Image 1 (cartoon, rainbow over the protein chains, first blue to last red):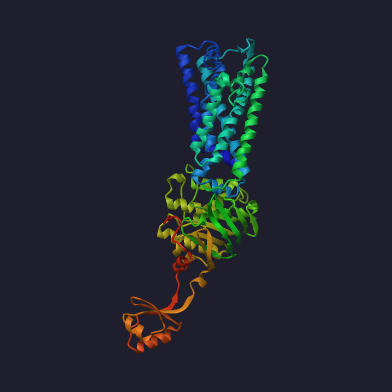
Image 2 (image 1 turned 135 degrees about the vertical axis):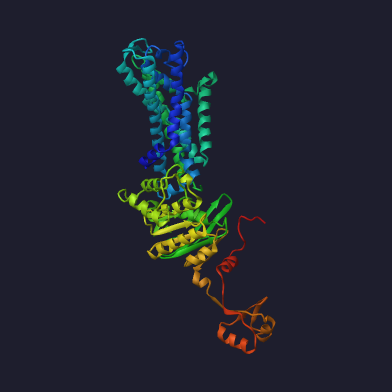
Length: 268
Length: 301
């Protein structure tokens, strides 16, 4: 069933359009930077962007930092919000369940296929950004870490791979939320917008000092912690907390989705 | 093949299916009739484990549903409330994906089985165009093909001829009859009386959630013990047969007694012209209309 879901995701034109669009903004930024040579001052603008001008191998990270706060979660919410509700709307859900595919299996297969989509999207963005970055800005043999020490390009590559993994995991909370909402409604749009509302609420509360007590539990709280992978030595605290927090969201929301979906009358 | 005991489903305050005891036997073509909103589709969905019953028991192929869905459903082919397919994929790809999604569909025979069922439903020559470019009738045929993929012992079909032209309806009817003669039991839910009358051996009628009739079609439409005479000399016939005439409707008289030949001789001897004479049979429509208390629950009077 997991293979079937992944095949369906890969055969869907929307998957590839989304990935192309995710690449558009970082590529545009790279071209603008290369043409004008005006980088953001260190500490301003998206993470790593100021470092890109001197070393193009940093551009995959800058590109990920660009799409991370909004574009990537929106894409995840669209795909995940459609996962069950879209099947209901196209009339295929009843045939899948009467095939039969167990309802729990279907949910898990959907979540795995969303995870594969996120991984594919993040790897594609990083890959395109690497090619764009190295071609537009050239590569230096080494670069400064966030802590000021020197990182070789091999180290940057390894840590970029780790960042790709971390960012993919970071999206699971939003994905699980959209999947849960997708089992509640037969409208993919409603599920997607609900997940986006959840995301926006989290981002908003994070900026509010009065909500400080809630901050450690917000799903977006540790998203940018992937920059800690480029400290020397790596600062693991927020990374592990971020992964743990996403795991909690996935367990809670997937359980809610399971409880709802396995007892639901399929009337679509 | 299908047995339900006091099957009941309520949605909040509304009782959609009320204590239904279905009895579909092996080898039946069972016509499940009912007006729109009478609970047919809800019943079909409960048989397939899509809607969960409020109370009562369901047995399909001798096993409890929905508990044994994993072993029962691979042996059942279903078409529920219209076909469903991924619009951006071809019909072939849709069938293959659905087959791969569950158990009981061997991968090595998949391509051959897809070709076979497409041929069966009259889509054999279909190309790689996506389902979104299909006509309504083609989609309906594709839905039927999906139901036939694993040579099911039991077909549960909800309005299978929806969207088909008269030619297509005939083709599907012939297909169902040939599958039936090959040993497939068919459970056909429909509101088209003519369709059921032409195909089915047993009939169940659902009215506002209750099963009000369940019997052999032949029994339901058996001669009533009366005869029907059509004659232009209605008044004279009425006078002659006074006492035996049950009703007179224009030139049509219903007469008690089942001996048309004696009746004919009597009438002709008196010089009464007879244009039509035969035993009275109830049509399925009469059976259904008599059993059903109203014409449909989508009407609010």
